[in-house]
Image 1 (cartoon, one colour):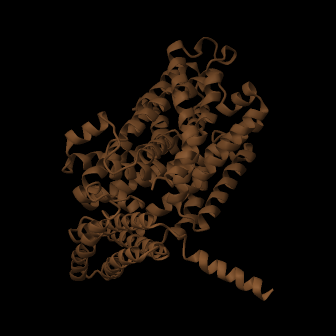
Image 2 (image 1 turned 180 degrees about the vertical axis):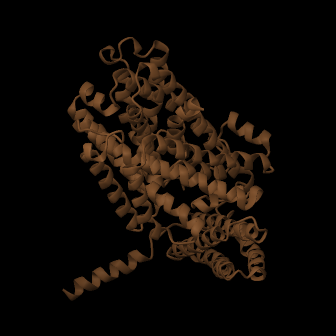
Image 3 (image 1 turned 45 degrees about the vertical axis):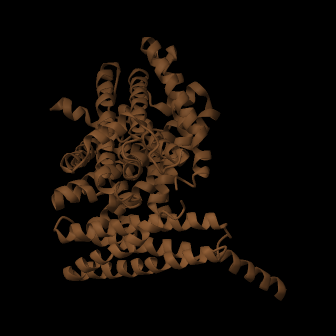
Length: 144
Length: 409
């Protein structure tokens, strides 16, 4: 009985890591992740800047930025659950991980700045998103 | 003025049917991703809707009976039951998506989480069905829905490349970097979003609510010829407004807040207020239409007294079905299922089930026993049969394309 329970637990743990993919498929997933993050970050940037220009309802900016933050978390969790099939893929994972974490953190900062009505921090954070954005633009072409 | 007000049934059906939460999301998503290369799908679906909408109005006016009533009698209890089950299920799913959609609009405006709004919206939908006269329902939401014309204004003010927009519309092709199956999947989604089954049921039953007869056929025709193309103009305006602002950055539209960004860019807060009023009116109208459609179809199938023209005490079973559908849809959205996902699934399932609604209508419109001299003319049958073939292709291709493209990824 104990062996059976252990086997089930092991199976559940393995299934949490997501299916194994080939190197090509992994590259495609990284490119897809970069494209998705690009879209999420650009949306949040647009909303934050329109808000600073007085063109947005504050509640709308809050919702759009919060949605972007949640979407970024979801994208990050999805790619992290994928097992890189070889060393080259693992290097690619490390390349995408850094801008992913930076973007997720900046989106959290942006949401806090929007809710605090801190225009200075909101502007600075929206501008800082340009850095991970450049990385995502580059990574979205890795699938060839 | 009276004539303008009479048009509101068509306008309301159009704004509530075309520009519901499904259409808002699908047209925005396709505009931001594919530009205007899929505008043809909206134009084609509108042409089919005008053709079959006119038929539904004519059948109602001549037979003085609503669609399900006639379909059950003409095609038999069993076929009509399949028709009823698929339409009622789709209308219920649509109702759930619309209730979630109205709650999302209210979240954007108030900052309060949409799940808190869901029961409030459910209650409002039921109150409107219970208390608001049919004429008031049409007029209020039909006219408020026109606030969405703010997207057309925004489009004029945005730095759009009109030549490129027109070229994409008139020379549709798969954009670079996109796969053909994905492009086709979104074409089918757009057709599904425009040809939602509850539209025909609502239009036909609404005609009975207004007591249409042969004398009113002209009004019914104008409703379809003005209302549905107006819905198309609104849809295309929303689609085109996404192109100059969101397409250059390949923004993937997945939230209602993103849809409003082009309006905010050029018209600021005032434009946003118009956009949200329009969103609210269209999505709320679609919620009442889909809830009423469940009540209409079930009551007509079983031969119960139905309609808002009767006092609730005189049509209790109809009102109970409407109430039960609102409660079920509200409960479904309260499970925290994403309303946008429900919307996309409903649009795709709707595309697969299109012929089930439109084939019986074509059969009845050709039956001299019901229609007398008002049966379809040859040219109408030629167009309607071609349209039905297109619907069949759409229906057959929907699910394979959905699986092949992982729902358009």
